Length: 306
Image 1 (cartoon, one colour):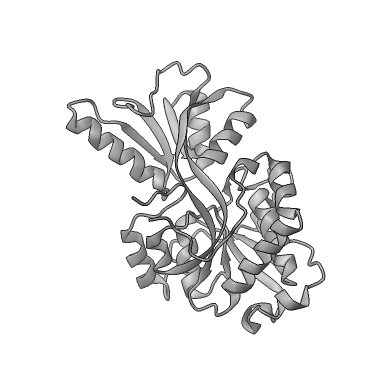
Image 2: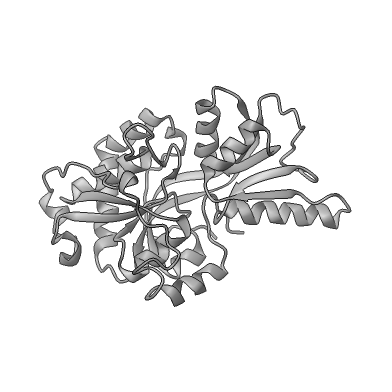
């Protein structure tokens, strides 16, 4: 059976994404546009490596920029730094390094998570870098270059005062971020509770993961679930006010999303990902942010499991 971790849209969303690709993503259309404070996070363009740069289609490399769609509400992967108002994170630094191998400067545009794939389809973005899980359903509409491995993890307040059990959270108030696979996960678990004659799980769905984290710290919810690096970082950043409960599960690859009409760009991006792994840049960035547990050694195009 296929496994997935972070941020998998419901299957029906892809039909909508395809239908709206030419309309909803060019202007406003419900998309959260990049705010002046949270855009402009760019890398200094290093000198291009000629062989890799030659693989980039002219339509992308003509201006020297790579327009990247990102939902910057998912620390430590991608978020807005309160002090500088720049988009930061290990995923951001990794994109900058990979883009540099291709002679490109990454320009990040903050957007609602569920608008990024439609934005790729319409040509608004040239890359989606937002902790996307590479799964078969998504591969129908975009291509992925894998670069990390993550699973789903649960957290509760320190000491787990509400006695949350990931295997039996019936009757508990549990938080998740909208648009993620965790929404489907918690619904399925709640359905199992009801079938067993137990109380349903009170599912609290928030727009941003940072809101879910804050709800748990304040006690508005009993527990939460999200991708493993996100939960681990939340525990660290809250001064151990939270703790991980249970074991991570449903490990699957993250992938950079690339439009189906991008020609050889996916091949160029894959080659550049392999290069940053080979030269040690990849390990250095993951070590810096404390997320090396999910490192991969063999990135691929469209590596969904199942």
